[in-house]
Length: 464
Ligand SMILES: Cc1ncc(COP(=O)(O)O)c(C=O)c1O
Image 1 (cartoon, rainbow, N blue to C red):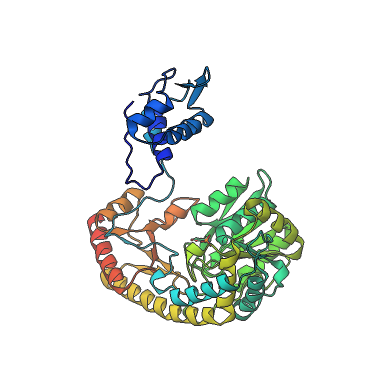
Image 2: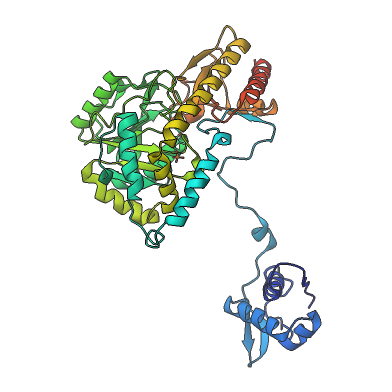
């Protein structure tokens, strides 16, 4: 039996012998019933000690690749052959495909990670890891680190007027997990969920997976159109992004907020407020929350993905008191708790005032980018473009009333070096937002913005 063993490789010899033999069994070159050489023979042939071969055979035996008969003779077992095309075929992934390197991607909701406060974060991380107790390195509680929840209470009161106690907060792995938890907490099979249309595909999917039956309600420049709330549906909850509707970017007016809360009271249901990117409001301080108007009915979800970095995976839910225990339980059975050390770093970041300084610095950066990109768009398409949803967040809408962007058109635009999503791609009811493109700009610098708009101009001219 020919085995290629390489002593220079950083792989233990036992593992190399095992890999070689199991590979030959899997690909059929060692068929079932074939007798393997004795450990002594093989060791001699490949110049390794006999113990190496014995241990590799042992591993093969434990995993069922081989069996031994009459004491010492080793044979290849039945059923360990795997047709080559199966084990070489990659599982097709639903994750977004990697786009070409040079492409300018106007992707929404990505902050400028080049500005991430690495030095401060590294210093705080070092302090946390030096001082963290042995107890905190063990399993924690599902609601998350008390230090972070305490800091959040004062941060959210100061910046958003949220009134809550630390006992009402559960730290989650981003807003995505918070939404999943809400779905699991409140939905049974076929329960109605009223939600904004358009909205991200992920959010639609999360509620559907939890058994929800979606009742889309149209959105305009003021957010959810509350005059269209269903008359005869009693939802488990209504989902909204009131500070900066995703994707259209509108802000829910106070009149509509009140109508929405009245609907929730009438139907005795909850409102889920997703406040994913509202810190960056360019014409003044962030707006107050819906939660503030009715803390007993509104479940508030926040995230640090857009303020700091999506990789942190830290978000939170603020719950009416009667839902806290249920939420703790769902979180526990989902992943026990969000990693504690990163929560403690974030708590210190908030406590030392770094967040306030960072948000105020990044607001200036993003405002300048937003203004640049809007100017460039207006220069490129002087007569016919309408901009909306740009007061807050990291994206806005460019409406080309004369155009319709099909999926194919958007793919063709990639040939011109620019990647975008249309509002239609996020719509449940199709055909209403045909000429609207979502322009995400948080992660693009001035040069990239200018290049992106040049490419977009070429692409649209070509399509028209
Ligand atoms: C509207 C909305 N909510 C929630 C999220 C999820 O954010 P997170 O990274 O905190 O899971 C996103 C992500 O882009 C989003 O667009």
